Image (cartoon, rainbow, N blue to C red; front, side):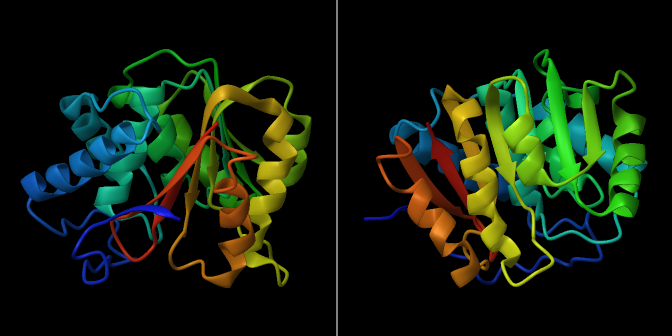
Length: 247
């Protein structure tokens, strides 16, 4: 049986891809939706608690609004908050994000560790983007928020980076798309390449768990197999969905 947290308006919340900072609902509603998702995850043993600093999240959101060049994004404000909260709760010393485009999804994760939204001290937060021009833009964006270089973006193949990463990975974020017919099916290859690096209590977050369709199904089957992971939950806050998986 698939574990799932799905809000009633998941299919009617309209994300304007070209307006990344547009408010889609009253802030109190956004907070309530994400808090309920976090409580569901806590109740199923995915995360140990649900606490994160709301003021620091808002500081992070404002910095992204002021400093990032974002041509478009599918990351809704709800999911931005969810990714930030999960990273703030898990506090990964090392995080690997695959497929970061302009860096917005990457910083939604990394922003809990660097910049004005930082709530813990990480060692290495790595974003990977296979398109060199987009990786360059993402790196420029990230440097405006994190001058330290703890958060950084590489122009590389995520499968290779995951395979060769020399340290334990505390959180893996999947949002890559292969240019060939595999598309989002590349999630499975990236995750398998990282399996021997994943920390015993690692989290794996996979975007597009709903709208990725058949391309992501093999990954979802792998993530939901108790032989591979302890628990996996499909968190459906909008039309995209995020699979949240715990080692």
